[in-house]
Amino acid sequence: MLEIIEFLHYLTIALVAGASSVAVGIGEGLVGVSAIKALNIQPKAKDDIQKTAILGMALVETAAIIGVSIAFILLIGIQQADKTLYLALSELGIALGVSISGFAIGLVSAMPARSACLAIARQPFFGNKILRFMLITQSMIQTPVIFSFIIAMLIKNFAAGATCIEQSLQLIASGLAIGLGSIGPAMGLGYFGKITCESIGINRKAYGKIFTFTLISAAIIETPIIFALLVSMLIILSGSPNLIKAIALVSSAFCIGIGTFGPGLSSGKTAGVACKQIAYDPDNYSSMSKLSILAQSITGTAAIYALIVSLLLIYFIK
Image (spheres, rainbow, N blue to C red):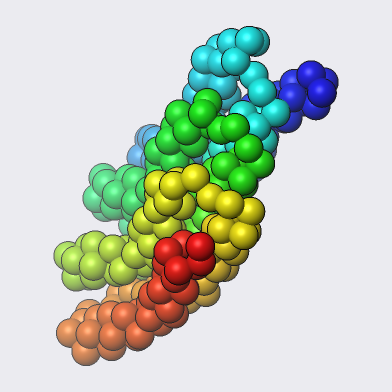
């Protein structure tokens, strides 16, 4: 039994640090490749391109830093005498939440940085504004992994009091909800951030309109991950469950996790296409932005349906 407890505990530590590190390594490599291509296109903009690439890589690193931080907390924060099978099982919720979101964010947060480097090569005298824009979009992309960190800390606190398999399943469900719920919105934000930086490279005169549109659209794209955070927290706070209720909580986690994938991704793609069209035709900004926001809002109703069903599973299954 002790060997199983130790295996599960250290497996959690390995997953939260390893999964995000793999994705971050790939993402930073892709940023480096794009920076080299940009330098080849516009050697005279080397200072701005290098600065953009370095700062972009630093933000990509966020997922790995959070993963390593949680790994250290788990490694030194739990004493040998405190370890139980139910604690070790509960920690799998941390592994699911942080490793899934960290892996997704590590990959997609590199997308705006790659586009920004190439945009500076096309608009070398607009480098500072492109850099600022990249930093804003990349910061927005980090939201899911920050939410995962919050849930991981909650799971760690509640895991210490887990005394049965049902409570362990409850905490696993919480991590699963935020982990799966991060994928779609993260991909949508990453794609949208890529297109926004690319659009400024196409037409720098549309910067103001693209900036306003980006803030509104990013908030809509992020909405599903807020739903996932809400469900994840409610699962933790739903009280001590019986076996049927624990199964319902896991089902609720799958529901919100899968239900946010399509809306998050589709909303990002819709906003990205509109953003590029605004760059090509800024005079058509009003109609383009209104249509895009309307389409994103309608798409987001699918995430609301998933949220409603998840809440029903949490509160109406006894």
